[in-house]
Length: 207
Image (cartoon, rainbow, N blue to C red; front, side, top):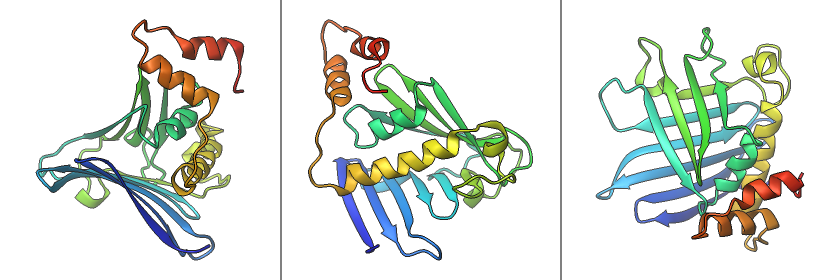
C-alpha cells in the first residue's frame, strides 16, 4: 500500500493527521490529533494499528496528572467510528497489556449526550513520562497473552472495524452520509430535542 499523510483542520486549535506508513508485516495506520493553544501543542493522542495496537495520550504538563481527556462532537470525522466502536455500550475500557495489574493504565471511551470522550488514565504510583498514557494491545488477532482476549471478547474485532472505518472516512474524497448519520445529526440540532437515536435503536434500522 502506498504511504501517505493527510492533514485535516478541525478548527483553529485542532489538527487531525492520518498516516499510512510501511511496516514489517503490514502497513502501520496512525490517527493523530494535536490540540493547540496560542500556536503551541498542549496535548495530543495517537492511535496506531500494525501487528499490534498502540493507543497513546500526551500532555504538556510536568505535574503527576493521572488522566488526559479528549472530546469529539457529532461533526468530528471520528465521531461515528468511535460511536460504532462503543457498539451501543455506554463505555468501553481498553486495558494495557504491558501492565501486570488490571485497570491501572487504560483508555476509556464514553458517550455523554451528543459527545464522545476518550480518556487515557494511569493509576500507577510511578510511570515513565513517555509511557504514562501509553496503552499497548498484544496482537490485532486472538492472543492468549492479551487481557482483551481473556476479559473483553469482541474488543479486538471492534478495534479492527474502527480502523477500517476511519480509513474509509478520511481517505475517500466523497463521503455518502448514512441514514444513521443524517438522523443523529438532525437530532443533535433539533430544538425540540426529539430522541431520534432511541427511535432508530428501537426499530433496529442499522443493525
